[in-house]
Length: 332
Image (cartoon, rainbow, N blue to C red; front, side, top):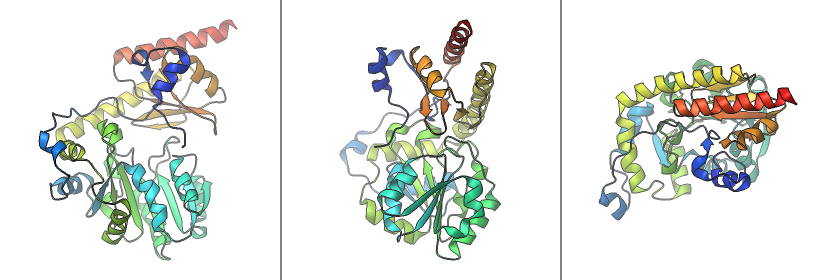
């Protein structure tokens, strides 16, 4: 399995710091979780049912005419390559590594390339996979450019897959409303924006024929009853959505300023994280971990991703730790 953020127990064991004493900034999950209510007993007792209005609520939230609930967008990432004939697949890099891993495992020819190369050489690929905004490198694309790329691929039976796990804070840039187009597949995650990663829930927006094939591949009951109950309420809470979008943007800007003040000027970021490409990333990662602060380390390129601190105390703790590390290096 590939490396991911959130391995808090492993870090606690390695550094000898109890898990509850850590500040975990290693994921892009919002620290401001939607306040899930109590789960009714029936959600635990009965098998999930498709006609529980979740689809209608999700269509309204995403603006997508057709969609399929899945056990996190990860489930779709792993299954989609199995629905596609052998293809040459271009995948945005650096980016979420599970995409390339899944297509390679299914036997496709995979090329990890920058956005500039993928757009310039679109004729070379049968399938192009983009992450928008990109994780961790922050690439962003306008809707018209993405639709033009989709048109080039679809004209010869190709696919454009857009992973929008981090787009909820800027929904105006989403392609969901265009996902009735053949060959356009949009992946959405509930875990990041709603802070409900434990629900393991997401959606695939695409044409009905593709969604039917994907559903057959994944089998029945892709979401648990408790997850479906919570999602119906969370996706319908429009007042919370608006307030949280503003809060996430402000928090991310505050994080960028804090990091810059310690010489870790963000290379890119979005409402959920800041990403710093730095040749000393591994040293920063270790020094912060020794102080009970977990970040996401990337080897290529050498870089760190910082998730959002959830309150003033967390910001102060990160600020103090970075100051201590900087001072220690100056003394050396």
